[in-house]
View 1: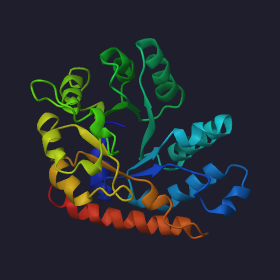
View 2 (view 1 turned 180 degrees about the vertical axis):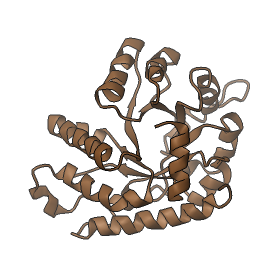
View 3 (view 1 turned 90 degrees about the vertical axis):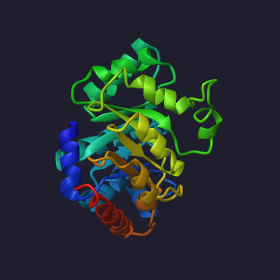
Length: 274
């Protein structure tokens, strides 16, 4: 999916919502545990319920890899289901890969060739040669970690050098030499608030993947105020606040309600640019 197609989906749906598929068998409705593949069955129900209100889905690989082969099967089934039934939805594999060049090349082959996923989150801290292999695929996106939503982000990402440049700012500045706004996005946590203003000074045109709205306390209004550009430029992720909003047999229906609420808030924000 290219940038123009993604922006078109945002316009048509009046939404820049990404639903995070952080599927935890300990949190899902217990009646699903009797299914042969409870993770996939949960994901399928969530996807069918929320698809009208979002433009993207983000499976977090940790929630699948922890189950070994059967977890990977559930992940692959989820991706295949999205491609077959919702081909216009942008798929993000939240795997945070990144290693020396030849290893990164194998990770890229896995997600972009074998699984043919639209995008992958990548850790930038090993430098250019660890990221470049992911950028060799036409029509695929690399989503670099820049400023994350967790408390520990302050340990390194906000530290400054002798000239006052913070580490996340250096990541944003230097990485622009590796790729373009047509193939690279950045992860910026919703909890970072007004720092979106500083980020947009460095990367005014790139899309930002924004986790942390909802359960982590990030403000959608603040994210939009400081982070939205003239094409929206945002994919705001909500995971727990949608997929675990209810633990009964109504879980998918309630998830749809929560997704719809966010979509309506996003539609109001989009009036400023569309």
